[in-house]
Image 1 (cartoon, rainbow, N blue to C red):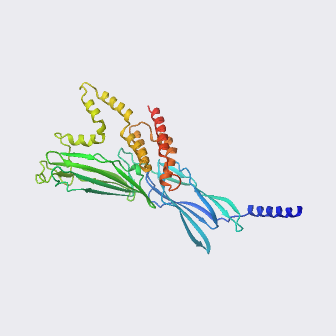
Image 2: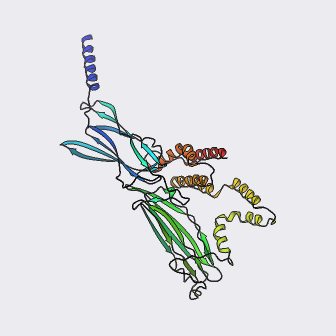
Image 3: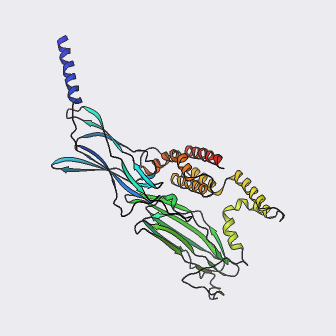
Length: 425
């Protein structure tokens, strides 16, 4: 009996030793990070496409690719992981692919840390064991963004569609037209796509509608579509104009600064359409100003989103003229402390709506607003908010894992932002 158990123990020991001595030949398992070929170094915030590729010549039972923290980058996973079966010199090979878009957050040298692919492998006899392989770190050099106060939008493609629901020059008396613009941007961070601009004009009432935006993830990068809408109708005179708009961006393909101009447009009732304008305006370079005799056009556009506060604003305007502008600013600051700024309210609305992508966009827009007014620096913002956005980014862009808990994100975001604002001089 003792001899029987001794033989069993010896057999197990021999199997364990044989398993421990198993050697995986060089080239049987490889993991690399490929970076797209470029004519010029990427600029800060410009998209950089990478592919994580694995080549495996041994049977794989389970696998999991561990992504590094990717410090210094914004990132998106572009679609699901791909597995492709093939042969190499007559031997079966499994190829793994994961496409990602990286967005450098600073200039200078930045390192893409190693990815780690963890496996559970099986021997021919069914024995399982753990094994992992790492990619080599990759260093890239990032050029600084232009030193300009203008909005920075590096995009690989930008298209604009501008439609009117009715012919704006021949509206029915008392009617209005809905102007609809769709901006399609490829290969850019969604938060870099500008917010809906203020549309102005002369002799017209302009009522803006809420902005709507959608981001799709494709293998060649994100596509963001932004929808802007305004209801527009002439004033009592029956004829007016909408001023032109201009959208600047950096063409990442041609490496040139470009712009798209939305042309000026006459808006008139049919009964007034035949009446020519009094001013001499050129069609090629239209420049129109809001009429001083009709200030209601600008006021209507500015005050429409703040209808609940019109009564309070009316009270402020009724203050004696001896009141200083500083006093008015103090009252406005007190109002914002009670209700929040427009950017803060927009973020809260996105959280309540359960829209993770819009929550991310509104939070980034709020950070950009704080930086513009020098409430804190971009460096401090990157340090303070880097970990807060990670769970949200994984839920939106990684296409895996649980849905984002927007209430927890909002709580952590407010806490970190408050800490930064307290440090402000």
